[in-house]
Image 1: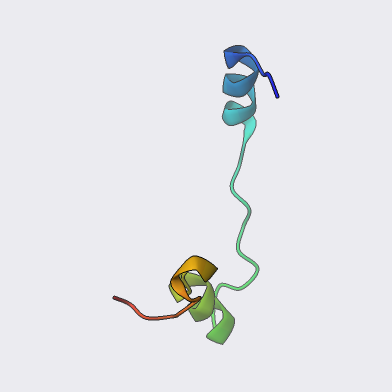
Image 2 (image 1 turned 135 degrees about the vertical axis):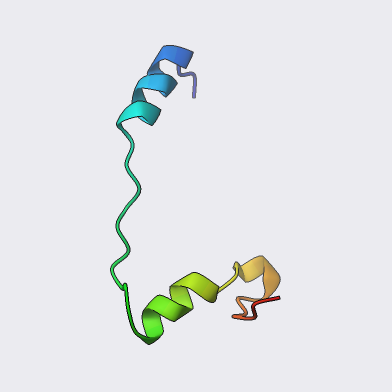
Length: 46
């Protein structure tokens, strides 16, 4: 895909991160702590 730098800049300027669905509770903790599947999808803080 070829996109000009101007188009990339335009898209980045208008991009907003998605609000998390879960802000409290067990699922919020999971979202904050889980690692990617390549790391075993573990929830360690290390």
